Image 1 (cartoon, rainbow, N blue to C red):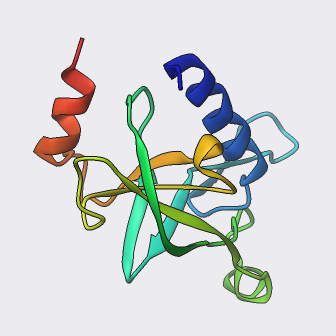
Image 2: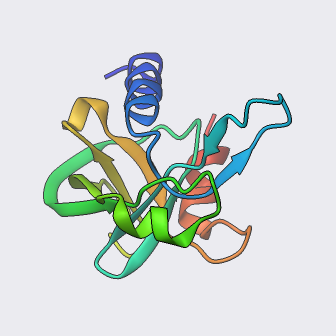
Length: 130
């Protein structure tokens, strides 16, 4: 599958799954939600990383997509249901490092488990490939 087709699918999946956590309010007056794509799988949190050429492998299980709390009220976030999506392996990376999440392997988004702003070295290598 070409990178551009995978990227287009990833963007569509991310747009469809905009009910995820990490929200902020824009300064456009109306209070528009802007949520980071974040998922939870086997007790780890993952965030999407763009522009990574990756290959999806076997289905691993189910990842949870937390609701987007764009109002700051904890009560509302708890009341919203958590969505789920299939979690897939990524060739060459252990699931503890990265997985792909989506409704199908073709639409899966690459997500990385990392703390802080530093990417795991294996993921950085994928980004650095020509």
